[in-house]
Length: 631
Image 1: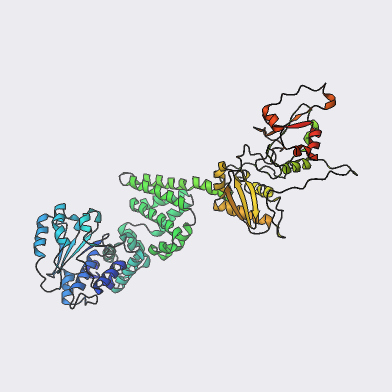
Image 2: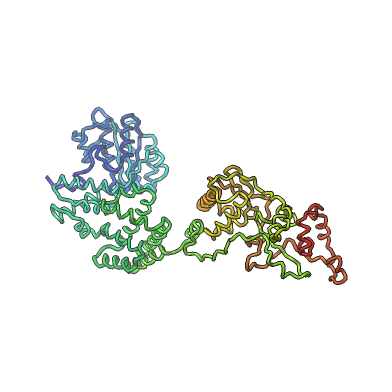
């Protein structure tokens, strides 16, 4: 008996023998069992994935004795004839050589004749995409309404070349590439039957080189048996077919991930000197980085095509770079691959691609900047030196002695501070508190003036015993702590105001012009940090509610406190000026007063109770000033 190659000798004979195409096998078996048989089928898939074998098995099931049945005997005479292509009722046609209109017209005339031995007359056309447009058009009517005893089975590797009118008349089955692990296992089974000692690493190397095609893998094994005899190692596979071992590709990838440019270039040099195909090596390297991306998303799926020795290495390398970095590396290597196809000096382009890959891993992208801002680390970014936040008093008393009578006293405003909102419409209680804080301690034995009760703007919440600050001091302390721990994020918080604390909800308002600041603090990293800090200060879990409030005015500057730090920048628009008022007994010596403007006259109409307040009057007398709106 003549020698049969492995690809023919171990061709699948039943549905159970088909490997890696469970979705196709299950559908066909159910269709036969339920007698739901279509009149035309289209098998699409890469080479060597089982299109012809599946079509022949399906034909055996349809034409078996007592059929259609899925439990046919593959050793039956009729089944053997179908497998060998000798059955008169199962016609296999090569679409590449019988692609003309005349051949299709002849087929169309023969379909009306009944089968001789089988229940159906089956036409199997391989490489059907090779048919001309005229041949397809001649087949349309017959394909749509064939006689009940006729079944069409088409197979192709390029479904995009088939007319849509043909595809719409068929049930389409897409056969996928067979996983490397399945191919390696089947090769080991064949080697065991052939009394050949096949190393497991060699089986995985063959499966990787076959690129998902079982027929190619079986042909490669056949060639290796002829070359090596009864023992095949991984090195034999690499030497015969010019492949690069998975370990070598992994070492090259690790050198790139570790920014070891010298080691990566040395690996390329060694592979080139060993006569390896650099184009295939680059393809293997791109596939390796693709595996790292899959490992980050689904480790179980990534291990399907890996040998046991590489699984741990892939898991380690997947943690050495982010997804974005790996994508940049793959994009760069893909561009190198397109250039290498037409380049005469492939090694030069490969080495340049390796150097570019190392550099791309060290680049700082915009997403890295955003992540650094979110985490507050500011890695790789210039950090401003944090200013001291020691909760200064609302007003500095030390500045009073150096003021002249004719020099106006200017009070800067803090955009969002509970201590003082220095505007003409500011609440009286805030101004009272500010002036009271500016008063010096009373002399011994003197009776201090009764201080008015501070009226908080928020509803106080009874803090638990674990609280470190009171409710009234919560907001300034929160801003201060953020300044100390995350100085990059404090500017977003400075434009906000505490609207209220209800139960375990802290409501924070932003002017409508500060939507960007609100969105920045709404990021999960920032919001979680703020809520944890609020819990630390209040002693209980709280939830921050960040809202836009149209009643809040946009800030005009961002100085902390009241603008009275050690070296405060000059204010752009002071809201209130305190101008000196000449004493009644010194009217002759006083400078002529400035004519009152309509705005000043309007300011004089403030509620009289405001001026009758003891603290207000005492402040005006002490500073020899009166309140007028800013010009």
